[in-house]
Image (cartoon, rainbow, N blue to C red; front, top):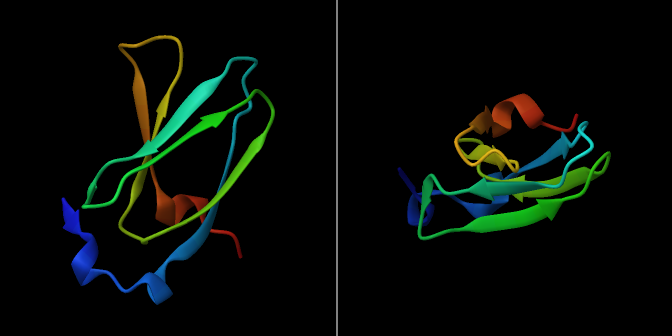
Length: 78
């Protein structure tokens, strides 16, 4: 787990995730110490957020057993 105290907020990156399903999803970032992010992502909607480059976005859908992890580096807005 990465410590937020070691991450300069000026180094946060703008990221974008699109829920391309027809189901509501929950997006979470939990791998940054002392920092927690959780948002509801409605079907066909975009989630724009700033996060440290080391962050991983976890996507949770109705299927509780399946969690998808995406590196924020793969979600960068250019």
